[in-house]
Image 1: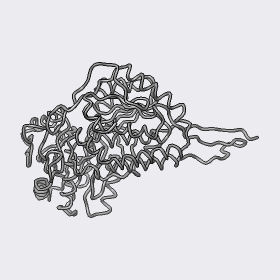
Image 2: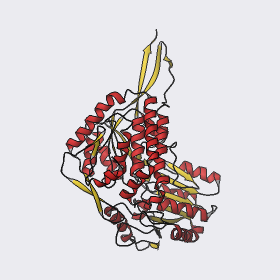
Image 3: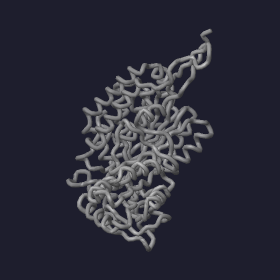
Image 4: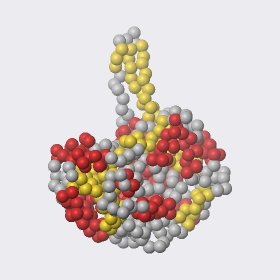
Length: 483
């Protein structure tokens, strides 16, 4: 099925057991173009029967896929990566349709990243870690088996639909598991395309995709079949998943929200820092849990740095439609998210000042201008809660201890950055910043080889890297009496 078919069939179908299948229910969700607010299709709200069918397919497939060798799984993932690379423009068209992201940069920024991540986990499949076999007890030899867990239930978000699907699917399949995945209700196209392409190289039922709403996602994760559930989403959703999984002692992998600080010292290159932070704040309309959201700048350069941020954002952080030139970011993903971001600005306290933006752009599409807010205090809502939009707040600090307290003084702990020319200070902050990733004189770059995941309300478990691969395995000790 080509992307054209995906978009022209009206109502999409689930992908189960290696083929597209009709939903057993009659209800569907409209698919809305976030750049125009026009309905361009619909996706079924999958029923309990649809989930049972998908999990049966995954369970049946695990009987054989779980017995494959790492070399076989590696080859399948390499072939999927090659196929995605050859169809990169097709995937980019689907992603841009669902999200409104700038089409010109999607292949380089996201599609080829997904290709690289698939190839990384293809290699990880043949790099199983375990303790060496030896006699840890006299007369007995022990060794460790690293095995697949079984069937995995996964839910992915709308901010990076294809990337997040690959982050979830690739390590699970590389480790020998099978998957039932539900993409966001607003962005199912590229995930269905991924399943379709993967089915050319995987046995039927290894990767299954069902569409639906929040209730579908909850039912998928609460289903008795999966031995592990994984979600990228909000803190609220993560807490609900953890509570539901506890009743059945399912393993849980949670990648949740963020409120990343960018700490700026006067000994850094302020113009370079402003440019880096603006890109990290507004790329993808700030709909990124690692986005720079809180600038914490030394009081001696506060005013100068705010001026630099405003100038940089005004010049280089333009929003617009997916086919417009010179656009850094597209619209917010949906009407609810537009209302969410707008609400934060409407509720700003009187002591806050909107130095740039703060408004919806146009009256069609979910566009929000690049926004800079100053004058905020540590306990203000805009500092403490995740806005998930193109809004950057600025606070000032007195000394190192003050900066650390402000940076760490939120519930989220996913990512942070420190901008300084002092190597000793940078290393000290890297140690004491309570976040899963700390950048130094940079903010936002990712590589497949390094782990992504946070602490506190940002969740637990790692995506990417060998740590992400190991999360989808179980460890078994085998001991043999040798006399």
